[in-house]
Every structure is written in C-alpha cells, then in structure tokens.
Length: 265
Ligand SMILES: Cc1cc2nc3c(=O)[nH]c(=O)nc-3n(C[C@H](O)[C@H](O)[C@H](O)COP(=O)(O)O)c2cc1C
Image (cartoon, rainbow, N blue to C red; front, side, top):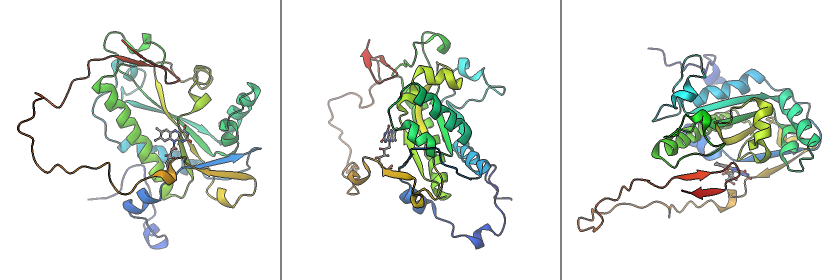
C-alpha cells in the first residue's frame, strides 16, 4: 500500500537528502515571526510550494458540517466549516497600497510589504433561527456547533503553520486588525456571513538575514509556561458531587461583533 499523502508530493530520495524533522520537533520549533518591511521586498519564493501549505488544512478534524447556506456556495457542497482565501505576493503588495491609501498606520502594511503569502482564514457560523446569509454581520450564536466550527478551523490553521515550520517558512497567525474589517472583506470578495479566525502571514525563508526587515516574536512567547500547571490529573471520581451534571448546556446567546464587542441576549 502506498504511504503517499495526497497534496504532499516528495521525491523518493528527499529523506536521504534532508533531515526530516519529527512531528515533535516541528511542534516545538513553531514560533510566531512578525516580519516588517518599510518598502516591498523583492522576494523570489516558490509560490506553488507556498500554496501547497493549504493542503495541510484538508486534514484537520471537524465535527459538524457547515450550514447549507455556506455549503451550497461551493461546487461540491464541501462540508468543512472553514474557508481559506489565498493572497499571493502580488496581491499582498496591492492590498498594502490600498491600506496606505486609506491612511492605515498599523503594522499590517509593513507585513504586507514583506509577506510572500497571506491567508485569510474564515469559519462559517451556523445560525439556528435564520439562514446564515441574513445573519448579523460577524455575529454568531454561542452554540456547541459554532464552538466546534471555530476549533476545527483553528486546527486547520495549526496544520498549515506547522507545515510552514517544517519548510522553515516564517509565519504569523494574527487576528487581522484592519484585515477583518468589512471594507477589506468587500475588497477581497469574502462573504459577510463568514468570520475571520486568522490572517496568517508567510514570510521569506531568509528573512532573518535580510537587512531591510525587522522581525518580532509573539508577545506571549516568553510567557509560555512549561510547568503544566494548566494540566490536572483526575485522581478519583467524585461520587458525592451535588451538581447533577458537570456538562452544562450553553443556553445563553452571545453575539460577538467584528471588533470583539460582546452583547448578551
Ligand atoms: C487566535 C490567535 C490570534 C492571534 N492574534 C495575534 C495578534 O493579533 N497579534 C499578535 O501580536 N499576535 C497574535 N497571535 C500570536 C500570539 O501572540 C503568539 O502565538 C504568542 O505570542 C506566542 O508566541 P509563539 O507563537 O511564538 O509561541 C495570535 C495567536 C492566535 C492563536
């Protein structure tokens, strides 16, 4: 039986030519790298390899199908709850110009000057009482289905940034800032009934040797704890617990706005 994985073609002598990182090594070496440039970089990177990172998303776990209103927009009615929009280097540079033209003073423009690829990764909220197409912009119900749609989409992003790490491609999962605004969605043709989970930047491999860029790590990088205090071993069962069930159903509907404004109904 072939052990070839679709979407990850490799020559047979690849393993002998390169040190293949184990999955543990890849997980441990993944890190946020924000690469900023004042003017567009003349990068020369294999766009096909970059775009192949998206194939890794296809293997992410997902529990529920996206709602019909989302699926029917795809030619094969694909069930996955995530959507990925690929912006190649040329489009990144055009988007940078557009943001500068709008007087955007954030670092996003500088990252778009350095990026070889940006992925706008959205998820498809399921709305109980109305077709998703008519839903409030960026609003979603705090249901288990939606929680799991977000979780699946996060797994898809993690798959892609781990694959980028394997290829030594610096990457950065960002909340998006101006890239999550309605005008940017319109500019890129992203439907309003999808919600951005991440603007994921991929930068040139040799960025750390380039004099024309500045690089920053993630804010929480040094705060990471390895003591596993967030991990609890269950030592026994609490048979005398007064609560009937520890698994409580979420009944509150929370509408979360595009800029994280939360309102409770
Ligand atoms: C959902 C999500 C959104 C993030 N958004 C931002 C962001 O908007 N700005 C930022 O500086 N870092 C963002 N990060 C990256 C974190 O800052 C980074 O993961 C953290 O600092 C730990 O660093 P490391 O990724 O190098 O381990 C985001 C990470 C996640 C998972």
